[in-house]
Image (cartoon, rainbow over the protein chains, first blue to last red):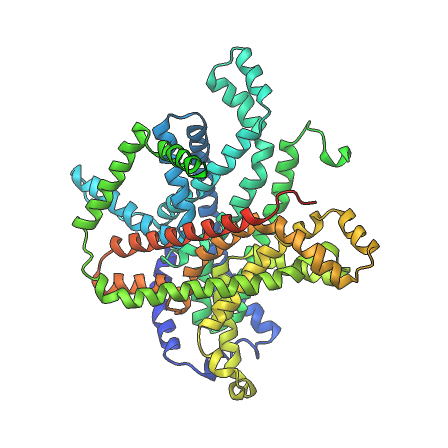
Length: 273
Length: 269
């Protein structure tokens, strides 16, 4: 991974900057002409646009992975909460309550250390040597675990919103639980779940920024490095903000399409008024 | 009679907790707490006690200030979007979209590193009375968290203002109330009642955002726990205690808000 190398190489510059406060530090942004800005943001070598885009790509990768993992945990968790035994229900209640009450930043640190420790202890216990967990996998696991708690609640609410008759009809047809899940429950809950899940996706894209605090290379950390080296702080933070905003707005368009698709065949509320 | 009723109520509440599987689970949880208390290292606690209390106090202070200021900002933002002319509505909408579309951490760093590096360029800022504050980190933290709360809550208030039935406002106008009086007596209270349940969630979310200020060198409880980890090389103890502290604060917040919500008349609109 080239990013780690650049990270290590550029560190000293940032430290030198920090020890040299004052007016000299910030000349870079305001006097920069339009051409200078384009040069700083250009995607090829002297510019830092490429670094930002790689960071954005990593952010999207983590958000996608975490959302998928969160959906799996959430679906299982929702069914556990609705149809599970008393012990499963209580454990899931503890999981969703605790995860939703503790700040993501604290959870990320806890799970990151605990997760890597646990895996290494299991590996050494089984006679293998210790491994370094890749940042991507750790990020996906940690954010997915957090997302899982929120999506459990969203999906549970969506399943409860399905008209009871549909489930009863499916049972009356003699469908097995698996078939009922695939044909009735999941498609019927989708229109109720999608607004909440869309919110969770937007939260996931923004929560990837928190991984910058643990030192994972994504858009916010890339921005911090670029800004630290070039001293054009405002420019790069604004550029990163624009990238995040584009991602959000683009997601909104896609989500609108998906929601319309999941509601196909349902009567519109607008026409009823 | 009432004592009897409350005794029955208490018994009913206790029986929820005293199902056999719950007793086992509670015992397991107690055993875990016991293990954590006796087999982990807690000898650093007395040394950092005072610092931790300061940290908790600072986090709560930031939470209270930013929620109050943010709500004060959210009311005009929501009002502008719900019923304002378009030259108010469009900027308010843009503000909310930008705040909600970018990570809080980025906004915080943009203000602290970005604006913070621009300010010293101007001599008149450095000579002004604001300069002693602008050199510290906490004003940037307060501004960033306030904007964030205002952005999210502004969207909620838009829905709440729009959700007040037209008839209420028309009746108020028929009574001859002035616009300001309609807003103060009818529109704002009813919108506030509608927004209250989401306000609980937003406040808890805001609490969970406060540790981010530690990244710009404000010493809140999160920063204290980081310092403990650096000083003692312990990984889990400070983090577990930190999680417990945040859970306790969340619990208290939810309890207080549920008490406030219970006082609100249910039938509105």
